[in-house]
Amino acid sequence: MIITNIQSQVKNPDRLNIFIDDEFKFSLDISQVVDFRLKIGTEINDDDLRELEEASVFGKIYLRALEYCISRPRSIRELKDYLYKKTQQTKYKNRKGEIKIRDGISQKVASQVLDKLIDKKYVDDESFTRWWVENRNQRKGISRRKLQSELIAKGIDINLINLVLSESDRDDSSEIDKIITKKSARYSDKQKFIQYLMRQGFSYDDVKSALERANII
Image 1 (spheres, helix red, strand yellow):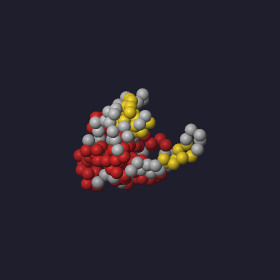
Image 2 (spheres, rainbow, N blue to C red):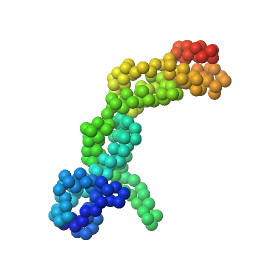
Image 3 (cartoon, rainbow, N blue to C red):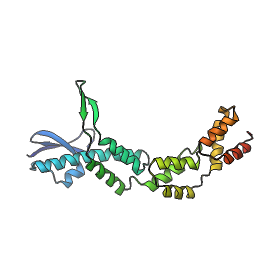
Image 4 (cartoon, one colour):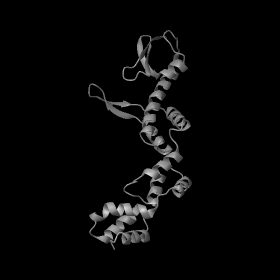
């Protein structure tokens, strides 16, 4: 088999379409083409083809996962969950309207993408935790207990959570004041409002003190 053509993609010039024996086979990033030392006239065997096809899938998934991580900070568990979904089969309609099954990526590729994004620091649990604590419901208010619960659900180690929370300037007293300012007008029944605030992770004593400060009780 011989590479007979290499063309830049119209929508993504950084990705190149590779033709083998005059037939399109896969696409690769420019850096991958350089790394594999591919050019028109390069001969490849079946093992080479499998390796290049796997590299093609890796390149595509890596870029999508990178965009996922850049859209907002992510925890490692969030990225693992994202990549796990990519390993599953999906249904799609072809141009004829027929339902088809598309295989997911291999676990090997998913692991390679995860490892590279961690190595490049695009995903980092400590950075994610600090971002989450400082930005989550900044205007609306949120209890430390609820922050802790949310971060545990994101796969963050409890010791790291407690460390970041201990270094944060956010405290339940000011956070509950924010919520009272936003929500108090919606509750004519003060007992129900107290119950709502306690469901947000605040202690009864903190709720009572905050309502007294707001002259609600």
